[in-house]
Image (cartoon, rainbow, N blue to C red):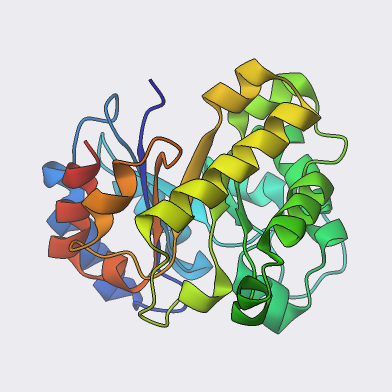
Length: 250
């Protein structure tokens, strides 16, 4: 059994006080960490404070990380900095980083390698545009993204990698891929992992779905065999909804 994951990406939301209020509201009401891996990716400005206040069943991750461990990169954060404050996870390749910050598949690969080399778990995001989806190009896009992101990642490092299928047309739009489509695409990614590595890694790797997930549709999604949890945006900002979704994952 692959342990399910409930991950919330706060993006550029919540002030310091709002972030603390959220943590205090959810800490004692989340499922056992041995049953559900519950993660929040908050803005960088509150990482230190939330790591110090994360409860037994909650973990904090970073939304972004540079692929160099140090250097003249104004505004960036390195893996060594994240390690120094006990951050264990980092989002890599989110579609908004690709779209708004010009991150390429090569950049994503560099970040993945840096993460695993620093014992930080990368949650790697993949997804296609609505135009690509309608033109039936999803499979080609996903294969390219997966293969490029995992280039030179060793077999022994794959146990510390999490994948997420996030169709761009479903992120923040209110549109959600049907459970069948989401499961099929997550299954396709699993097939690519089998081709790149082996059957065992393919069976063990956890693949999430992200894209307008909420308490109303989460159960339908996570009951699918290839979906091992969810990466939630807007709905993860509400403490009550976050608690509800985390417990539904169990």
